[in-house]
Image 1 (cartoon, rainbow, N blue to C red):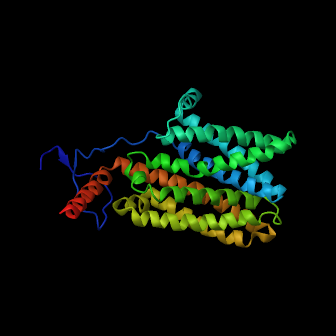
Image 2 (image 1 turned 90 degrees about the vertical axis):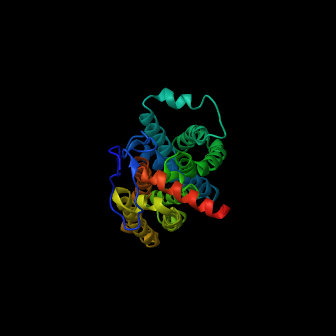
Image 3 (image 1 turned 60 degrees about the vertical axis):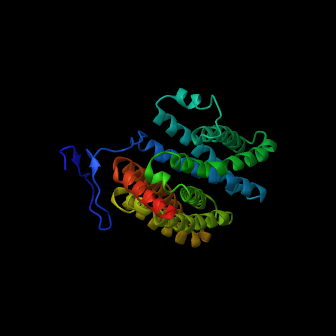
Length: 313
């Protein structure tokens, strides 16, 4: 072996095939996105989107307290999401520049055009909710925010999966379901803790369904990820994602007992919120791990090439 061909440094794994990389250097460039800005942006935007959908449904059913909580969470989450994104970009002008054109083939462009109007509409709806001004417009505007909110829950998953980062791209089919479930869990948990028990039943259901969806889709994602699943099961990402699942289970259990409010409602709120945030952070970190280690780029490609060669033969 030449002096320039060195083995990449990594934690030993029993089923990992022998692999050597040229100078041990990454094949792709690791994303320069900041922590906690981008994980916060992923969590806040998704939770805000699910909260907007919840608020519209509560308004249609006459559940005024749940509607109020949903509208305020949607507005606060979307505003904080924009701030986190702008802080990561460095200057507000960079976010505005993304709105200069609309490119349907670009998840970043489409996402920007979902986030910007969603933030504006949810802010207007929340202002009407708090001040009582123009309530006749708040209903239609809330419906618009709910439509945009469905996109908010998943577009960041598409944005990550559209990159060359193996840990995100290889799970592009399952990642939107993970993020959507996480958003439902986060929104339901916040509303469970913030709404009187007599009106929080839909929020409690959201917490349970979101937790179940996050657990099922997350495990399915790891199962189908092949070699990439190692990044989701080991190191910091593995620890964070296991904690997220444990918190989701606790949140669901507490939500089932939160019909009378009190400690169970708060426990569901705290654990559900933490689980949703931890899931986004764990996925984000797993992607960065696979970008740093050339093994995750080269070995899956070689295995796919061998499978394709055998199928053609």
